[in-house]
Image 1 (tube, rainbow, N blue to C red):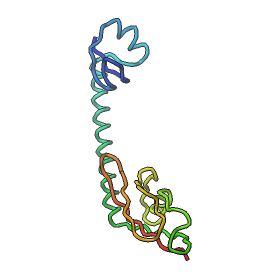
Image 2 (cartoon, rainbow, N blue to C red; image 1 turned 90 degrees about the vertical axis):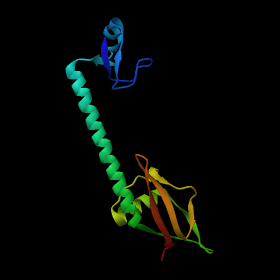
Image 3 (cartoon, rainbow, N blue to C red; image 1 turned 180 degrees about the vertical axis):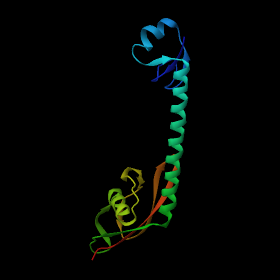
Image 4 (cartoon, rainbow, N blue to C red; image 1 turned 135 degrees about the horizontal axis):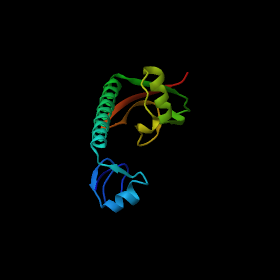
Length: 149
């Protein structure tokens, strides 16, 4: 019997694939547990439509990530921070602060988890940080840390 898998089934395939299984296995295990549906014409068409919708959504997300990466090239985030003598900051500039400043200054919403900081920013100056936007697209955030008055 041919079935379309609704979830990953070990030894038979991944979600969305069509698999050939024995009648008893399908009737007694896969279908009652809703792990698969019979491979009828309606179910095949529904699966193809879902695949098309998923691909379209991925393309849209990829285009949005590329647009954000282009916008980041023009943005220079200015962060004021308190420092002691010698120009060392009292704390460190975190990715959360950078994310909030980007939202406030330019209206670009990037989650703090997507900002990659190899080491914390602990002094004044200009810095370039990588930002993983998804779908193998990354951008660069330019940060300038200035003295708070």
